[in-house]
Length: 62
Image 1: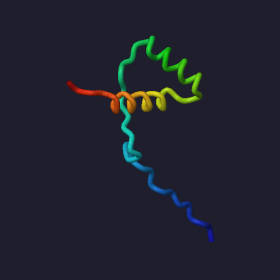
Image 2: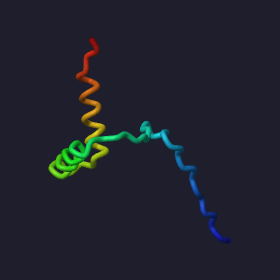
Image 3: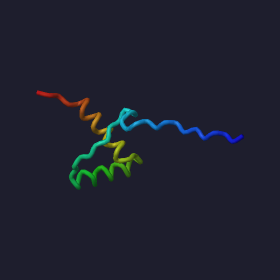
Image 4: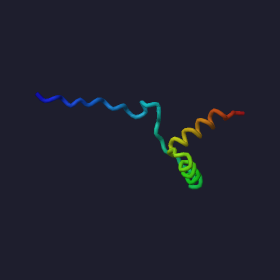
């Protein structure tokens, strides 16, 4: 008797606590992100999340 192949359901987009969206970024900013990514061995995506989290935590609305 053959064993059955069991395929688990894949999580739907967004169920991992992240959302995907696109934004426009200046070429200079991308170059700076790439430089920082190379220096830190982190991806652009990871750096953007770190930088956004920091900016949000340290922002004040007046």
